[in-house]
Length: 491
Figure (cartoon, rainbow, N blue to C red):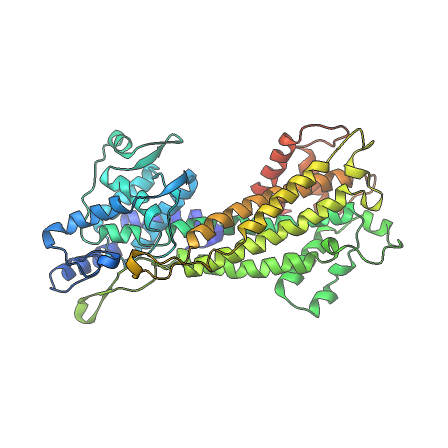
């Protein structure tokens, strides 16, 4: 079974096994071959596709049917996916076919394994999938190199697949019955994006707690709202987890006792309600993680191939290609992640606003200097962008194929924009991190909690304390790299 936390390593192990033993693929293929001679109509095997489901295809045209399918469906548009995402698509498709319920032919399956082993990754455009009937257009581009067509990544650049394959001594692979359909039906475009969203989210929930703890001490906030007793009487799992995290991160703080007798009765919500807000996002993301992990371990093409009584082939046309589970999960992920940025931007505002005797905009002599003023502006811009990106994709549906495919998930767009939201959240948390580290320096010689101080040291190893205006491009890039790297989430 594939696990999201170790997805790449798990795929490596499973694909290595499939290179040496693919009996499930062989058995599944034998069932398709038997179905070809049973005289029955089998969708996509000896019939047309979609609204053309009732058009019977002559046995002599079965291979041409599959090749035509790849060519006609390769209508993706827009920016091409990063090579890493396309490679994940390819690996997830191989894994799903290898489960043995798709009926793909052995030569085609072996070529996919060989392409993956050699690092021959297809070039895939990012737009064109409705997220139902599978990710048809993107997966058609993924499969085109089997015909010696389309493009492959070559030393970081797209290149004609025929040229790249030729250098490796590889030519086109003839497609058999059902091959094209097995290749383009499926949710691997959505699933690859969703897996990336989940991997980023697992890091971001931890970083959000850490940066919030740094801001809490820099702003001389109270740890009382993080008391375990508070969360025991409203026992949402995420609340308690976040509160415990912040208490641990603040352990050893010298700043906390220094203002124990201050007049401030309550902190602003962006400090006081960190457990409730971060915790709700964690709980929502737990559903997302479970859904995505189920999906990457599933067979999502159509028709599915089973052995019936006496081993007779049973090809069942169904709807496992429908992306609704991922569509809903990605809409939820976008909202849950966006909230981490929403509250982070509010803490950033407090940091630059001169809250609790901090210098305005976190620099001495503000006026002549603008300091971190526009860092907060940039965070606000990204937060606003996220609000638009969080409009749910899954509530939309546009019928296609003459109404045969009359409800679609739009999960592909949901997955694309969820990943955009996750990347924006990385940047917003990096902006809060910069401001919190700068503010914490004004609380010296007092030290914060041990984990917060470790995070502060990591920031200062890359970004200096600022006493004069400077372009922030390098600082922001360094902080964003630090957030995305996972180094902070292990503190």
